[in-house]
Image (tube, rainbow, N blue to C red; front, side, top):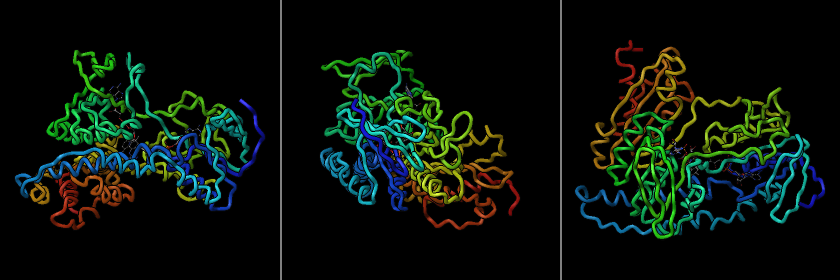
Length: 473
Ligand SMILES: Cc1cc2nc3c(=O)[nH]c(=O)nc-3n(C[C@H](O)[C@H](O)[C@H](O)COP(=O)(O)OP(=O)(O)OC[C@H]3O[C@@H](n4cnc5c(N)ncnc54)[C@H](O)[C@@H]3O)c2cc1C
Ligand SMILES: NC(=O)c1ccc[n+]([C@@H]2O[C@H](COP(=O)([O-])OP(=O)(O)OC[C@H]3O[C@@H](n4cnc5c(N)ncnc54)[C@H](O)[C@@H]3O)[C@@H](O)[C@H]2O)c1
């Protein structure tokens, strides 16, 4: 590689996903000389291969499902799925995977943008390699922000690496729904995209290695999704250890599981989590173990390493392992900006991280699950209510499956976690997220009037269930 001149900047932001782009823009707005570096698309995974295009697919797939629910309730409906408008909308939303507008927006705020791969070459220096083999070293006068996100983690299944498997990026750019799709991994990506393709006519088989779908959520969420997805026509297999994967042009993918099952499909989507490869980022330069799963950060998002913190080196987003969500990345960007500008403010708190899996029914959750709360030794009382049995569930009829579950710590007298699964589960979650975030006393929540007949009224019923037998406030 050709070594170039050394440049200087106040702040260098490596990775311009949701958090990095936001931090770079805001630091430039504050008058700092900021260099932003990205090797791919400014905006990161979320707008091009993640949240936005996947939710477009989910929304359109949900429209089909609603149409199919008309018979028996509101007349007749003939639903003929067509993927082409979906692919078109996704292309429009991603500008055909072109970030010109995002780059212009960023440079318009004064950020100097470099397209290339950044790596730490000293504790205050990032070297950027462009596609033509040129290298530019930049020294940071004030701060380096590592916002490199994550990439699909592909498990070491024998044979898999030699096959043309899909990751989320291939699924999002699909111009046609596959005839059949094997989904490896029953987490958020696998279930959202698996259900969406299924509604467009793809024969979908989900193969989950663990005992439960959405393993980080309440077991009731697994039970609900297993039932509903199976009713929807997906084949769902849990506890399946994959022994091998093969691919042939004529027969597609064949997956063999240790307990004897054999699955075949035209396409295979690998959705088994994310990873942040740290070695290539040169994190040893700031004392971080290159084999670590995430960049260790303190409560102000400063990078920490054995022997203490690294002044002027910050990290945010998926790379920090605090929750691979756009809202976490944006939340952390706020902390980084405040920290770099020396503004102080509250440190990071993760007791109320919300998450929504946009399946139908949606699974919204915040804070701890009941099992996590028990592991922490809290004085746990949980409450549960079935959404279908509520007045709104009765009114809604078809597609009304869901529940609200709350997890209370009776010692501190607050909710420490909650799940709202069902139609608009992610929206119902809003009220529960406020309660967990603001530590609203149970005595206050218990007095709340919940509008009738809403789905969120089920929160009141779940609270009653948790507090049954407790003295009135
Ligand atoms: C299919 C899918 C659906 C999702 N849906 C949701 C959702 O509904 N809601 C939600 O909250 N989250 C969702 N997510 C997660 C969300 O996309 C991520 O949490 C979010 O994008 C992480 O943001 P980030 O700032 O950490 O970085 P990323 O978005 O990962 O971006 C990191 C950027 O850094 C760049 N980069 C990496 N290394 C280097 C380097 N060495 N030099 C230069 N540039 C580099 C990359 O090119 C990339 O542009 C979804 C993810 C996927 C895959
Ligand atoms: N709606 C959202 O907010 C949303 C949507 C999609 C993705 N995301 C983010 O992206 C992350 C990545 O999504 P994901 O679905 O890839 O990961 P995930 O961690 O949510 O789920 C991965 C699943 O794959 C399973 N798995 C792992 N290895 C396996 C193997 N060898 N064989 C079979 N199963 C295996 C795990 O047990 C798990 O259930 C999510 O954790 C989430 O943070 C968020």
